[in-house]
Image 1 (tube, rainbow, N blue to C red):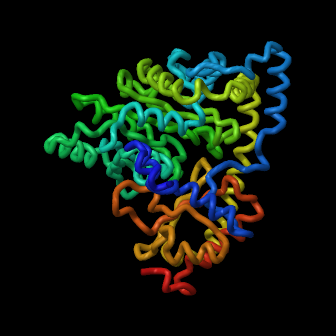
Image 2 (image 1 turned 135 degrees about the vertical axis):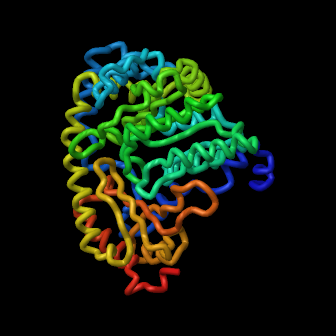
Image 3 (image 1 turned 180 degrees about the vertical axis):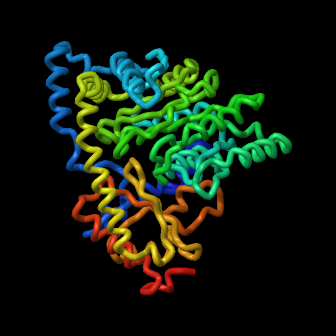
Length: 430
């Protein structure tokens, strides 16, 4: 019966049903392996969740709005007060004080992921192409695959920055062979990106804008800023594309969220653009899905932003995440895997660390290294999941210090280091 039903699925249903999402597989392995230490979970620390702040916000709602409209349906676009608070919040970032955005050009979404999905649904057909970073957010890559859209990597230099001349050549090649019509979107993470924790310099954003502005057909761009607030010592000194003069008049969407920096369970994100048509189209599609993000969650976040709870909470959590990153960095150095050909950079923010291995290492799901790590009861995210194309690098992996307890970090890295050690496990390398 199941196979008979699947034969009735639409093209979109068949694409989405091809295989289980990798993130589901990783969560399943974590839950089903007793005693496993997960260095894969990219969410925030349970011990830091703002229960007191949320309770205080709920009490304020009850006293300020006794009509309880926050327990009713909202609108597809989102609460007006929260949309205004989001704009004010964005003006508080480096170089953004003059940002002039009408709150009607802000959509409140179920995390930033919904904004990404709605945009791809809006702009792309199966067989179309989207330019992404290398490496890129693997959940977004899976989103594209589930919609039948091909991800293509932006050419990248050895230091991780975009190779703008090479990208220009790629676009010219597609122009000449007629493939440019299938290019519908460019996606990148501006700060402390998932998975590499790199941030994009302002000069690179300007260079990209100058390249795209020379083209006849505009290319919509998403700047995903999910981790922007999670800096350690100081904010990343680059304006968003929303504020850069070189991007004015071009179709850009800023995707942000309060799930990663605040609480994933609130599932409240936002999308902002100077392009009113883009936001309104997303709101219409969202209206078909859910009539609007949960009004109660929106109202809580609105209070947290308006009354300063949110900024104070971040001031208290940033030092904790920095300490956890320092702890993981020290444990990696103590593991001696650097002498085995593994390398990494200390991030300046975010929740993640990216490791590059020797060319003969294979970290893919099912590989010997993967199996050895499961035997050692430690889990990572294989780096090949984070690259577009059919032949991604096999020798990279992503670690997270976000959710893991501080005391578990040294043991988790010790288990990982044992699995990666060439001297003890030479057969793990090809």
